[in-house]
Image (cartoon, rainbow, N blue to C red; front, side, top):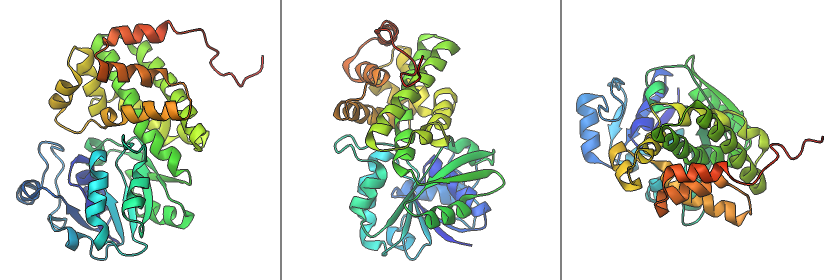
Length: 335
C-alpha cells in the first residue's frame, strides 16, 4: 500500500482518488477551494462534475496543503493546466527532495511554450516528475469502466513503480521513456478536438471527423518529431488513442466547446456553457506558436486559432482546409 496525495479535486482528481483507493492505497484528496472540500466531505460525491461516483469515507478530503504533502509516496498533480504553475509554486516549500510527482493534466503554457512537466520541474526542482496520459475520461474511470493509459518517467524504475501503483483489473498502464511525446500528444489533441467538435456543430458527418482525426495526428506527429519526440508515441495511447476519444466522446469538454462554436457561439460563450476548463482553448495559441517556432505546417491548428480568436466563420475555415494546395499523404514513401 502506498500513501498518495492528489492535488486537485475536480473530475479527474476525484476519479483517480476512487481508482487508487480501490487499488488499496491510502488517498488524500486536496482542493484549494474550501467550499468544494466541504461539499465533498458532506456528500462524498462531486455531483456537478462526476455524478454517481462515490468517495469512500476512508478517502481524506482536505484544504490543508502542508498536511497533504507530509511524506506521501506519490503526489498526483491534477489541477487544470492553467493552474499548474501557481499550484506547483505553492507546493514547493513542502515537497521533499526526490518526491515523486505525477502530472495528469494536459496542456502547454501559452506564455512560455513549456510543457506541464517542465513547469513543475522549474517550480519544484527537487521533485522527480512523471506524466500519466491517454484516453481516459474521468466519468468512465470513476465508474470502473476498462481504460488504458501510459506513464512516462525519466527513469525506467520510476515508471515501473508508478505502473504498479495505478494498475488494476479496470485500469491498464503501459510505460514509455518519451515524456515529451506523451505530453505533446495529450495537449495538442485538445486543439484538434475543438476542430472536430466544430465540424459536428456545423452539421458535417463522420467523413469530416475522420479526416480531422487522421490529419490532426499527422500535424501533431510532425511537430513532435521536430521537437525531439518519437513518432511511435503519437500512434499510441497518448497520441491517436487520446485524440480519438477526445474528438468523439460526449464526455469531451473540448469537443463540446467546439460543437457550440460550430453552432454559432463565441469562444467565450462556449467556455461559459461548458462550465469546466476547456484546455484546448489555452493550448491553441501555444500550438500555433510552436508550429511557427519549429517551422512545421499545421493547417488545422492555424484555422482553429482563426475561428477561436479572430472570429472566422467555422464553415469558411473548413472550406479553406479543403481547397489547400495538392499534397502527397506520405512523402517518405517511394513510388
